Image (cartoon, rainbow, N blue to C red):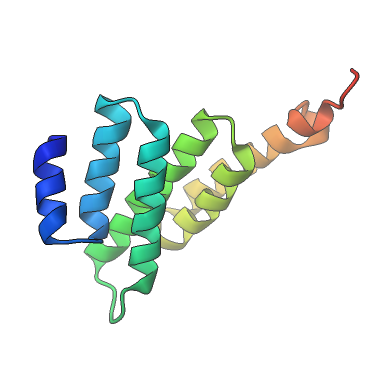
Length: 125
């Protein structure tokens, strides 16, 4: 779905998390605009959280995609703490939470001062 058609469909369905996810992908993959993608995906998660009623498997899959993409985006941008927070959310809707838990452990290792992660470096070194 290109930007124009996604925006048109979104205009008829404002706040639809699935459409916001797709529009965010367009901004990230085609336009290389990580900030716009992040903003769209974070907004989509907020909209998802605001929806009332029973969650379908498709609803949960949309949240899975949104939070996984946010975690990957943040990790790619070097925002490891933010990535870790999103992975914790991914785990709640993942069909394989044990795999997400493994990824969380690996990310925590990167953040560990003993692993030589960012916390290991202090100013003046």
